[in-house]
View 1 (tube, rainbow, N blue to C red):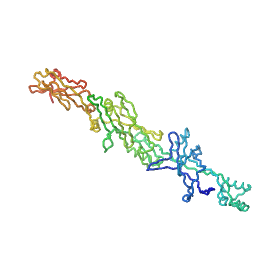
View 2: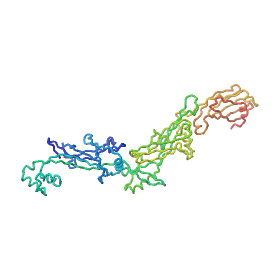
View 3: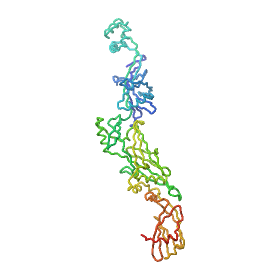
View 4: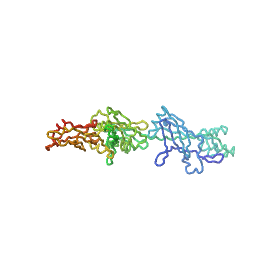
Length: 507
């Protein structure tokens, strides 16, 4: 305990590294930023020997110095740190590292027990009373011992007891006098590790998989999924993937429709692989590892890249999807907007077996510790062909309209009814709607609603509108044939030859 000339009581603080939490979250801790700024937080506490006895005494902070020591066990590089008192007993220390120092610090601080220390010095100008206790306690200090001997004429004396006896007998006031000391107190504390990992590899079915051991909780080991697969959503929950079509107002052709496709990627994890890795790592780590999804790790950055078609759907290129929501444990979600040509090409690719077609394939890039570790996880946007119709129906948004209209004026000439035998009526039957022409009414206007599903699933030409022509004769016979109307030809003419040649049986 120290006492000032004015009677104030002080103690020299003992420093320890500090981590602050609030609301269950850390608000500050040791940090090494991208620009090389290393920040340490220290807490100044009473020394262990004074704990609980300091009373009104205050910590004495004058003369403090802080030095970072890389390769502490080998007496390596010393780097001064600037210190700022943040209030109370909290101190913030900073230094900017670069070049080799930065590289060495990064490598060391991500180890579970970094070979990095902080040297703390405090220079003091002290007046110490020359009591026998002071002399006995400090006689082993060569500098103090020599100072005391020099003040007594430099006579060599080996024993502190002999020295005190001689000087106090010659000067009875000696024990009440003070000697002035310039002292430096030193302490060394370890620098805690930065949150980081140790990478391990374990083979599984001929492939090496990476695993990441938490350097602050060595029993915790993180794993990444093998990949992501296109799916409706996680098992047992409502569909996540969603398909919506927006149609232009009026009678615009279907190729002006747009599709919004909300995609879900299911993380694929073979838990037999994870169990195998846990057993293999148990022998290396000396503890039974807790295998945890890499999603729960710290300082993880992810991005999703997808092969996307150009506007004409004649080629595709990889594009980063900036709005993708990526959860390595729960799944990948991404929403894309496409014109109708792009959507048809993408939909065909989903159910394609051509390995050379990259369209709607992609990957998730995982970056740990500012690029120190990297993973690339494939996204497979392929489904079996026999699931096409069911998948379309399951993800289609039934709230929005997925049909589009086409207007036709169905016409013929009076001569088409002449026969023989004479024709009573011509029925033109489209899917979902039919019109009838008679000698007295040889023209009928009709609006046909066409389902986008027919085009996507049925692979029909969006310009073609198939119909069946049914010819009812005066003699009671009925014949049928098929034809196709085109939306770019709004007048559907039934020619005399077409009607005369419609002689097929009606199913």
